[in-house]
Length: 473
Image (cartoon, rainbow, N blue to C red; front, side, top):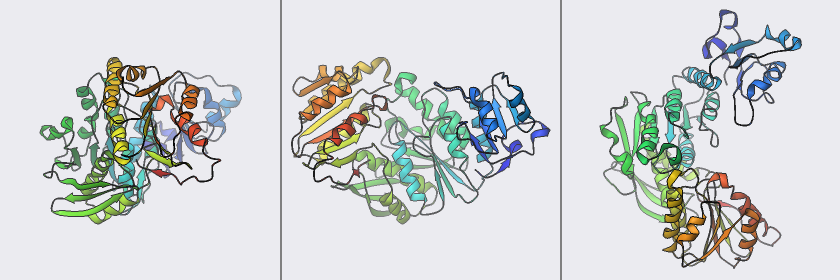
């Protein structure tokens, strides 16, 4: 964060206006001198309980919402510390980040949301933009009302582009996040059933995500995925922004599209086209869904005026996120695919189809956990997944989680094992080891299936040959 005055970030009395702020903190353990401490109430901890610690470590201001009692020793520090009471410290954090972002008028800002592919698209776009100027990208999954503002405070005068991922789990969250950023470019990767437990229907998921487009600056650009029927027909909506860039895997009438898609051992080749210009691109990931992510990133870059040659360079050099179709090959030729970062019906089907396409002559073993946050139709979604799997050439299916029993019930012609816990699942997987077999691990993050993956992979660490990790998403 670049130093600025407290009054530039938050309303405060005249006696505090000249306090110089050098950072933002929500953690009293790591707060530094001259940082503002926001006392955030979380599920496990209440930041108000640690205000005294934040002050003792040199915090220059405290934003709080509860009545606080301090002992004499703490009170002696308060004359040097701005104590700012607010109704909601989370709202105040967002307001402060909005004020901070507005200081950087020349930074081009991109907002990315969607049911699948947000993080991969963000990483692809960041890799593209880094070839054109200094780029700030929100780290990991810092995409909520705490993570996004904290990312925003990393903006600086020498930054040319900023890319913000925006997630949602409650109504109105995308509107809050996108109104903080006020992006110059906005893209919704797709609309799916993730978080449908909260939103109730695809239409309501769309209504939540579309708030991003309503907050794109009037001189900005909206990026439309023409392959998503829920997004394709949004051009009639009355957005402030009037410029659009469309993309598609199939529709050559879109502004940006792909053709000649071919997957290989190390990634995917395709021809990237924009209007009458085309260029051959290789991305170090596999799967049609990743080509769509690449098109989303390329379309954002086109909206920012980036040349096709620079888009190619960025896509070919991007570093894929972890636990998205990450691949490890063991000493006996088994291929272990870790796609356990998250799961919903569309992403699970895409992962299975990609695996089948990549390894047509190998035994495919699925290791699946529950798809969470699917609401009242969760049993139905899992049962339908079982029907989908039953129609595929799958060697075995190993399941974990309360809802996954519905997958088992729907499959009647496959080798299916339903585990009561992770240890039972691990012991069963050991019985399936066959040279050159493929194991795909896929589940929602809450299942923590990656723990079974790591334990299973560790079975091979003492063997003579372990190939270097490759990632495919």
